[in-house]
Image 1 (spheres, protein in one colour):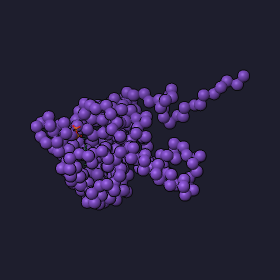
Image 2 (cartoon, rainbow, N blue to C red):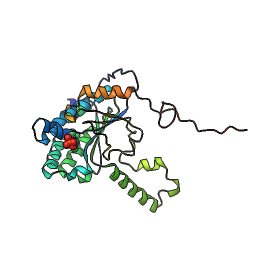
Image 3 (cartoon, helix red, strand yellow):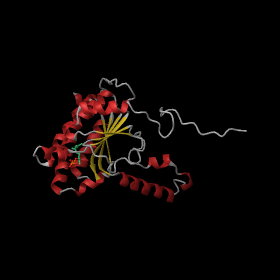
Image 4 (cartoon, rainbow, N blue to C red):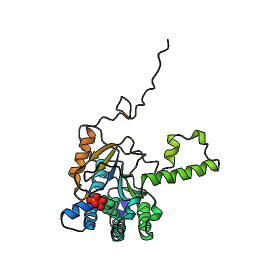
Length: 265
Ligand code: FPP
């Protein structure tokens, strides 16, 4: 039944005394450390991390977050031992199949960004099925970044842009930031307001380098398998206390920064 409805969940937004992010992006780090600290193989951390993905996705959907982007597999992650990569791909395929009812129950739309052609065929097939199944949902957009790298995103975009210039569809002199944005993987989704990284590392790791230019960054000491509702609320509370100026002097992004005017004498 839930699979057919995809109705919007009742949104209960916590009052944290400040602004609430529309788009949250997360670098899910520390799965390996979490497992090793418990004397387990690294892959158990990835497996446990699935429960965090489910809880964070569901909580965000119920709190009325509009987009959630999860860094699930980077272009660099292909360099990991073959067995770990194989395990992650299997986990991803199971996730795509098993989580369909939860995505539908919470009216979540699934989208993926990255060099998706690099993925094994069976993963890509399930991914396309989940995207199609959830495409009419009207709730939160969950974006999985898979075989994703911000530098490859820029390279892929630039290649397409240059081809358009060569065939006369685009005039080089008219290229501006908005033109470039149109060539990124999912230009319709607004930039992340809040970027969370778990497990205490202070790096962007080739994630959304263009889009995160003005994201507020929250680093959690908690490893991803333990990043659940309480840690999410701590990040939201941190965000609620931030003043965003986008390089100007005013905090309301909807209000354009007035140009500097010279006094007419
Ligand atoms: C980083 O931890 C995490 C990853 C490379 C993969 C993230 C994957 C998951 C959370 C599970 C699968 C997700 C989905 C959506 C199916 P790490 O291994 O680099 O940890 P470490 O830094 O402690 O070694």
